[in-house]
Image (cartoon, rainbow, N blue to C red):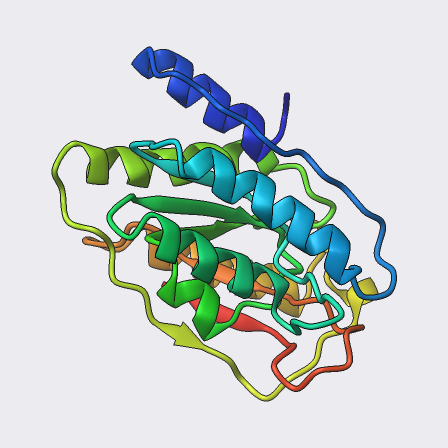
Length: 205
């Protein structure tokens, strides 16, 4: 699979690890996720994590809003962190995620796509795995810093294959990743349609 999830599977198979994938769910952009659906999905993940694990890898979008939680992924990650406080958590996100402090505080690695149209999903997952392998091998867990400028970007102006602001931002993100001591850099264009105050572009490194 040319997805972050596919990269996770390849990494785990290379380690000879036992793999568990309790949930795969997709949805087109629409209204808030029903609470019942969110709770069912969260319960499936938490039940599996409760059986014990050495690492958690999540392929998320980053802009989920539910009936009760403006920050769906942040709420999910907080629950996972409470359920497995010592287990490293790595997350791959879409370029259009609305990155929040709650997400950052409840995972160890957060890497996002750098292309739109999205053609680097597998590469993003592999990047997450490289950093998670450093943690698994006894290295330090990365420290992340989040910046959210007061901006909203138009979806039709986020194409990273043409000259423009988004391509320039991604180039800066790649340059930041190349700096000594950097594990990764994320520049999110965000998903502007949800009506909540924390939506908007973000930079994380």
